[in-house]
Amino acid sequence: MVEKTYQVEDMTKMPELFGSFDFNIKLVESELDVQIINRGGDLKIMGAEDNVTAAYDAISAMMEILKNGEALTEQGIRYCITMAKEGSARAIASLKGDFVCITSKGKPIKAKTLGQKEYVKAIKDNPICFGIGPAGTGKTFLAVAMAVEAFRKKEVSRIILTRPAVEAGEKLGFLPGDLQMKVDPYLRPLYDAMYEMMGMEAYQKYVERGQIEVAPLAYMRGRTLDDAFIILDEAQNTTPEQMKMFLTRVGFGSRVIVTGDVTQIDLPDGKTSGLKEAIKILKNIEGIAFINLTEKDVVRHPLVQQIIKAYEKHEREKQAKIERNKK
Image (tube, rainbow, N blue to C red; front, top):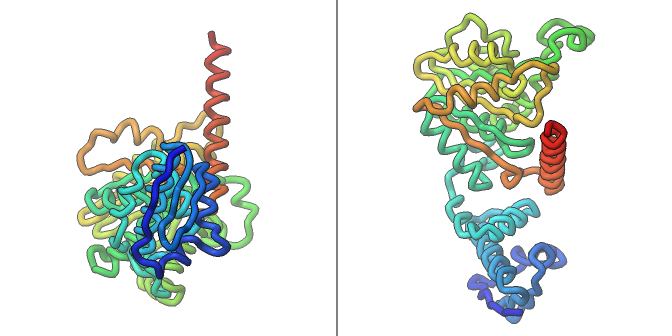
């Protein structure tokens, strides 16, 4: 057993660092199997050497978050712990600043993980960016935030949000109303993100002016989309033909973000995912970036990370079983 002391320089941050009923520090203790004792601002960390080092780095990263004026959330603490285990906790300091967008209620939107930071940078630096990763990693939310910010700065004259309506046949037909009402449920996540960024009244105003468009992917056929910020969401549910059709709509002055999760393909059996094929075909083209987000970048409830890990483990075991049966 070894001991290492972390000295808290700003004592005013102690209540936030420890959290309600010392929840934050107890979480570090349980996740890293260490004991932490507070001696007037000197935090004595005791345990196995590697665990103590990780705990020290995690607490340092947590303090960086507090210095940036942000609140410590459970998800944020778990991220600090995960990065500390990998020896990358110090990189969390680089997340300081770099606000992507300010919502209609004045809330700043920024990258919360290193993966998200890389994603935001790739969007800024490339005309076409693919954001690939599991649910909860902020793929769509950050894409919409980037689109709104570009629109506000007049870098583009309109925003176009689209996604495939996978059940475009029988099940869609049972929904009430005209075609727009039938496809609205499939576009709801995009509406929700736009409402948060712009507010409902501003959003409706721009929709009426034709400066914001939310439509099913089928509506993109035959169009050339100039001077626009275009987001294709749920791209794993496109066919190769749909993906090619979409990417060839891009006009001058436009930027494109394609988001998707290759583990959640809802296409009929035997149908190839357009996203999977695009990753193979376009990976070496300059100006097209591919960013892979992982369960570490999940910014929803901590259980989401565990669910993703469990499903990934199940898929690996299933694939291994298939390979064994082939032999």
